Length: 300
Length: 304
Image (cartoon, rainbow over all chains, first blue to last red; front, side):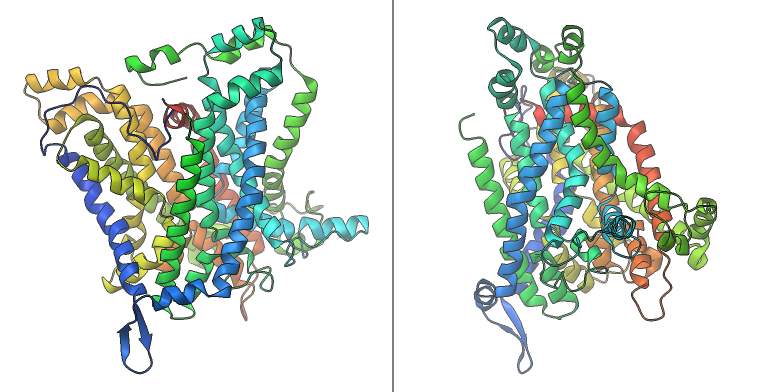
């Protein structure tokens, strides 16, 4: 079973080798060069320079990278998305998998209602989701504030510094459970049902079937979902940027690496250093995604 | 269920498991209750949004979040205000989003169709290089690219124009992968050869013969690129200064943020109603295209 980042799809007979395919692939590659390759090249170029008060723009070699590697703010952001990734991604994927298995078990009443309603949050743009949850979290007219007033209790403030990352994790989990559920559920549907029949004849129970047939069968989908979620975590920006209106003290300008790069460019005017941060982040993401893919597909 | 008609997929188009399981197994109340918890989690913020869109700005602060404000039902006046506030800029944002989706997602789908078809059905010089470059780029997070793209575009004078949002939306490596997979499975090469023998041009062959076979894949790719374009916040946020070009996402948050600025009017009721309208429009689009969405995921992510 292949993952999107791996081998090309199997091909039927090929047409004569020539340049003819380029008339189709050409347009994609031209735009791709403009919006992918050129910015990457430009970022690398920028990252090798520094704007100095005296002497203007000067070539500094790898100085920006040395600075980035020693930058405590940058690494605190990396640590934060790392923690986010280690906790939020497994929780989300596990819940999505449970729902997918429940849907697939054929023992659920109102199956299509669940499939559609749990998927619905995916159709809500991340910004709207963050705004909505931000209101819910808020102490003014938020639900937490309401509950505190109504019940005379004091729930912990989800926007305080120690909880803000978990609160953001909840928003992403809410948005993406349904999407991942659908990926897993679709994968489960193409498992040949003859396998279940023979398992039943062999006397295997539900959990045994899940462990020995269903999970191995959807391993490709699990790897894909994990890689997408990892890339998504490293990009974390929208939710913290929007919640920052509500929690300016809990969310710093270097809350995530992406947010840091943004702040450096737009408030700090340090475009060269910002470019170096972007390059380092891209490299880290690629390495992690690659390792997960290798491990995930190792003995397939 | 696979949607493609390629012979390879045939053994997999076995009947959906659920049909037979339904007959065989009894429903489980416990499982249904547990799954209901997930459904409540998924739906309650949307219920909150719906309930609170019926409240005035004052009502938001004075009433309980999960119930209506007694005696005041302001949904219709909120909707009217959303569309008229700031000289009706919400309509403008809505149309901008539509523009970015039609040109961005539509263009991305077209490029992915051409590219995926070319990769699946032609053997050409440099194909391996194309493959390697695109695969490598998939792992580069788009937001890491956004800041360098902004710097580059500002040198080219493209920032603060719709092009700054549309052009980067035109590339979807995942869309390319999907179209490639679909084209490899769904279009018999013999058919293309027959068309060539009959003297049909390459593009004519693509649009007359291949595109109809690729419809499920095309719609799936379109949905993915649409979601990506609508969700886009970071890119338009950095590229656009003029609120007249904002998409809904950036616009709604600017309304939300204005309460925190000096002398800014708090319009949380409009932020909530504006969000609700956005969500309702998107849900309508999603639910009406659900069939394609599902089958596309199945074929795209699970294929052999």
